[in-house]
Length: 173
Image (cartoon, rainbow, N blue to C red; front, side, top):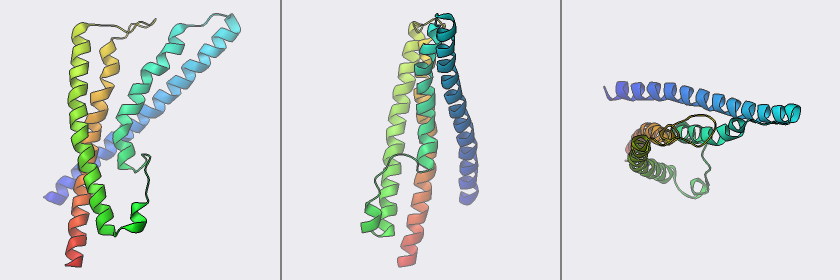
């Protein structure tokens, strides 16, 4: 049953990863298109549309926060990997487990803070002061969304590390 549950979590995370990377690609395409259209319209007509310029910074939070989990899962975060040359594989794995548990706990705290911020801005009813009528809470919603994804992914990684650490311990005993 444990293996079956782990496979379900891994499959679910793979689907989330695919969706998040697709969302990221789409956001980058929209940002590049908006900036290109801004330059082209300003060059041709001499008049620029403010929302072409204002849209990319708003979309950046939807690019950054949801990608936290998939980047962690794929080992694509910035890292300094000098301990693996000095420590045994068991200790390297123990440090990875510790790191993933810390990320899991931190992501839960930031998830709660993100929900609080999103609810606050939703209740205040504030709108972004740009040409497009976008509620401010939509931008803040990226924060708990990203950290929820990070919670799920760091849980998977911690379980994998714990399992491998137990297997290594059994080999040495």
